[in-house]
Length: 315
Image (tube, rainbow, N blue to C red):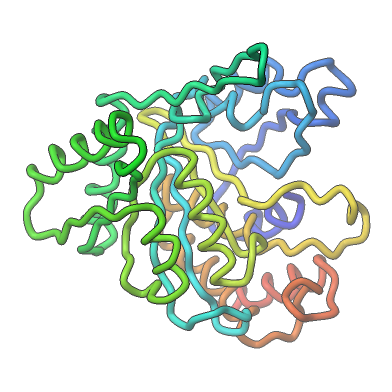
């Protein structure tokens, strides 16, 4: 987060930052992983940039709470390869759009005498809403193939509703190639022919798993940004976790956080500065002069950021 704010501060945009707290350290200080004050500040802000936090066992998830409270129903996870970063394929560029508020992440669970039960909630309203977002996203970004991912072979009713809703929305759009695929088929084809995909739309758990697989195609979670979008709010976060084992070592890869900030700039309609920041990062990755250890380099985070700022000044 510090590295990303350092970079944002030299862009041609004036930001007013308000700090808010969440996660494990917040729990130690305040007895809660996500204070009401944090939720309210996020709700009132033009955008929220969320750093990776540590989950507290037995306590509510800060990020899932924010998604629900702000109705951030669309989770957008780009999967893009960058020159200079070891990837399984070159020129990968697709996006997974995941329903973000229900499914198996609805949080409805209970213990039974023999184990536990989790409730998978799929509604037509949410399925149509996320499908509509996917079609609008495809049109806006110039992508022409949309793939709905499901498992109706097994989950006939819940995924049945999802696919019905998808095709209901698809009927309102012309000129786009539409398909639906089983989850197992997609999981295999992500490894064998990932260039086929442009925009995927799917349910909560399936999207979570597929997007991590997608990150593996392009260099790992250190290269995986994400956005959580609702009708009134946007929250942007790296996909990776908090990595407490390397705290204070200045070796964290800032790329996912910086790319999340790029998505935030796009959301704020600062497209020119978004492209400038993304190109500067791409230049740093391609040249490979200052890369963190997970990227195959020997540099510190601050060295990579320093190189990035130099590139920004030239653009």
